[in-house]
Image 1 (cartoon, rainbow, N blue to C red):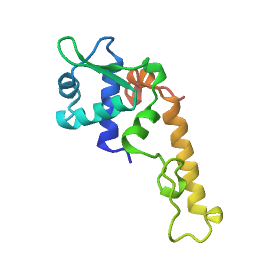
Image 2 (cartoon, one colour; image 1 turned 45 degrees about the vertical axis):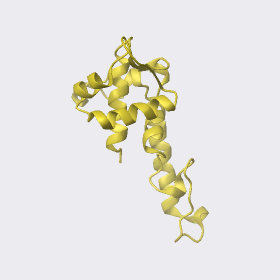
Image 3 (cartoon, rainbow, N blue to C red; image 1 turned 60 degrees about the horizontal axis):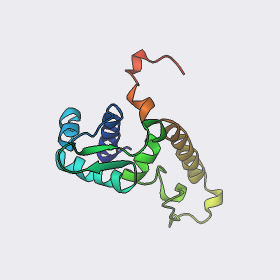
Length: 144
């Protein structure tokens, strides 16, 4: 399940994708109903990961470090929430063997969760912030 941290990070990045100049954290928080202190921590994490740049002082704020069509939802979620895998033994970045599994190569649950991880990654890694920013309501979308 997507955490609030991940959801707020996506909302903040979509907000920034709509502006060419820097945006203040207070403005992002107010317009997206995100608690300010929580947003500050999220923006710092995204900046430290290289997705944002920031400038202090007059005319300062946050802006995307690269074009919105080169930043994916998958990148943001991995930075803020960690692995996409639903269980640790299916993770590529945070792998841990299950204590109760005698043979993970023969484990049907692990095999299923690998498929879930791969399906999620496929969707999230091909969805850019630019594309996400232009999505409408579900009713307006045609079948893809």
